[in-house]
Image (cartoon, rainbow, N blue to C red; front, side, top):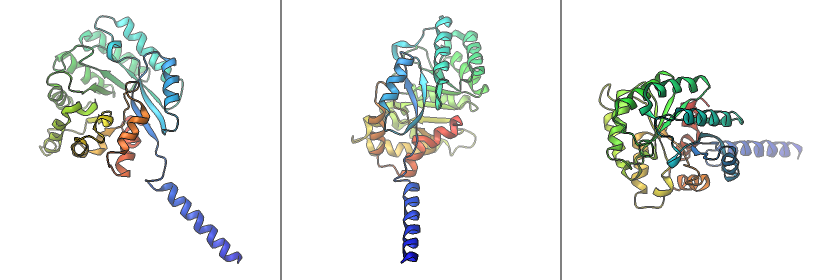
Length: 284
């Protein structure tokens, strides 16, 4: 009887270990790379309350977005905002500051990029719609090339709100192969465009592995007539190049994760999007 009990105990332990390590049952960590904190510490507290039970262990924090973007010619406000988000991110583990500049500030923007990089910032966010710049402007190219030289990732809005959004962003990435980009919202409702990457990557020395996306439009796509095409697109651009982003507070983390889970992706694909790809890109 004692031998039987020991065997049963070992079998139970083995089954428990197997269940805990199963992709379907393990609690995968989540990195939310698209979080707006317009009111500093107050917004961070609200965000932390909202992610209870979601598995979020880290996030990329922005102090700007929408009408809160600084215009060109106001470097004092830009520096103040960047310093504030860097300090806020440093207050707790797992948080990454996402800084900004306006491309039309030229040399001043480049100097600010150098300054914040020395303070540990790894991600630059620029937004052609709210900051009202043309993504094809040479000053944008100079800025993102500088970011790449400094080892920074460039996050750009890609909701296809402005004309030629997808095409201009693809050309920027082609011209600066040493810079890693994340195109937020993966083209919005024009996401089909990005399937061209599957063909473009077959052309020798044309497209590098420097284009990433966030899946923050999942709540719009899940359970919609476009769902199958959206998943097809995620797989064509490469699951290894898709990250989770909630776009908080515009969308909730729980709703975004729930929508992502309803897309019919495999457990392995979900694990990469939730955390694995961000871990590799940001060195978490």
